[in-house]
Amino acid sequence: MRIDLSKLEFGYDPSSPVLRGIDHVLEDPEFVCIMGPNGVGKSTLVHCMNKILRPTGGAVLIDGEDIGSIRLKTLASRMGYVPNSTEDSFPLTVVDTIMVGLQNDYRFGTRDEDLERVHRVLDLMDIGHLAMRNFDELSAGQHQKVMLARGLVRSPEVVLLDEPTSNLDIRHQIEVTKTLSRLPATEGMMVVMISHDINITAKYADRIILMHDGMIHSVGTPSEVLTRENLRLVYGVDADILEVDGRPHVILKDSVPM
Amino acid sequence: MSGTDPSVMVGEYRSYVLRKILFIAGCLVAMVAVLGYATTIGSSGISAIDVYTNIFYHFVDPSRCDPGVEWAVFTVRLPRIMTGLIAGMSLGVAGAAMQSMMKNPLADPYTTGISSGASFGATLAIVLGFDLAGLGGTAGLIVTAFVFALVPAAVIILVSSLRSTSAATMILSGIAVMYLFNACTTLVKLGASDASLSAVFQWSIGDLSGSTWDSFYTILVFTLVGGTILMAMSKKLNILITGDRNATALGLNAHRLRICLLAVISLMTASVVCFTGIIGFVGLVAPHIVRIFLGSDNRYLIPASALFGALLLMVADLISRVIIAPTFLPVGVITAFIGCPLFLYLLIKQRRSMW
Image 1 (tube, rainbow over the protein chains, first blue to last red):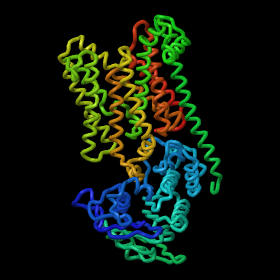
Image 2 (cartoon, rainbow over the protein chains, first blue to last red):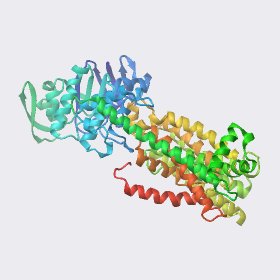
Image 3 (tube, rainbow over the protein chains, first blue to last red):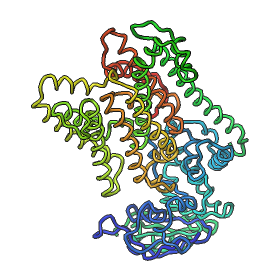
Image 4 (cartoon, chains in turn purple, green):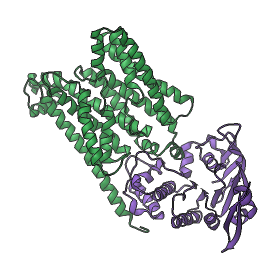
């Protein structure tokens, strides 16, 4: 899938746009991380890419076709999504929660092949032991793994993830990010993830999109994007950048006036 | 459990589904049993066997029916019992769907102000003799109550169509319209006679004593059509409870679906309320009790709530007929008296949270 973001704009209020002319192309199966401070428009950008929000200017093109003319169901069958929070008001079992992600294939009865697909993603997330538990009996970290499994169960061409590791402990953050980073190679999937953890992102991302003030400030490999100057300008922090195994490793020092 | 055998999980899931199906079958058996027993209650002593035999021959070979039993069963008792059954089904299904679509455990079929609209229509008909259909009498009251029951839902749908609104906004719109209709009802009642006030009161507390085969068939049509639509949308309701954003990402237009569901639920509920008055508690509690046993999967919750709602209303009606016989108590009072303690008991007893 090729996603063209062309002069993309979005704003709840015309006088204070959240996104201000984003131009970018996402194409190859790769692990792309979107970074930037709070409120910079990362989630808004992702939501414009899967029609949760309608752009107020510019366009999002999916394989050359304007996203506005693509049916939600068609788009959903090609694009997975993992939200940053859960709002399941009437909890289902973990299996049923993940099965919801099959939507297009989700018949009244449950086929063995559906259950096998669910089993596969449970295995991938290492939460098979939770299969028959009720969703609300799980910890926040386990919730997030179930949400990840739901986003991946349909084996979409692209999966958009909004801070999927924010509730996980450091070990599980590394394991989940590592698993996601392998998907482009193993499944041919494009993985677009919003992340706040600079060093885990630096270690696993193929490419980083660094956002600042509703625009893309910098795009490139972790070494190209995670520079001392960029971190100072975008995040307002002073940092030393080391190189570990050919990847940048950021040592944060202090905040600086912006 | 990396690399585990999927057949273990498939087996566990299949037995989990089987338990749900057994629960639904149990509700169906209990409903048929209560139906038979309830038909035996009355001044002429008819056994449950006589009832079932009569029902069987009524459809298979009417010439073999005992005329006395036939009259007692089909003319006197079954219209009321069957109306209770189908009204309970309708309220149970509508309640389950309403709670899921609004993502709110406090929602019931009357959440959108249907009861206040119907009350206003009934009050207009009883106090002022206002008759939308020009049919006069009870028929005029029923049509007027039905039409006014739909007005609050129409207002909510209109408000929702002006801009994409959340479930909470829809509930709040319903509450606002409900207050308006309640105020209008009070205004009309200010000039009412004692006899009219008594009739309005009788209507508002819910009662099955005036039920006829016509009321049964009318509610049946709405329940069959509405129930089928809601069952067909049960998978979509499972997606809707995961949140609007997620639903959109899964290819569902949450706003449009909610408006469709609201229209279906409103028609189902209006068809019940215009014949029976406001029977509270069934639509709220039946789905919650079912949820405790079956979980929140709407594919099973909706049919089970239909059967459990029917069972609850039939048992309540049975009690209302025998508790101070030969006088009847309004069934709406009994549904609250048996539904509330049962619900509280289950709430305390259950280990896991369902909401």
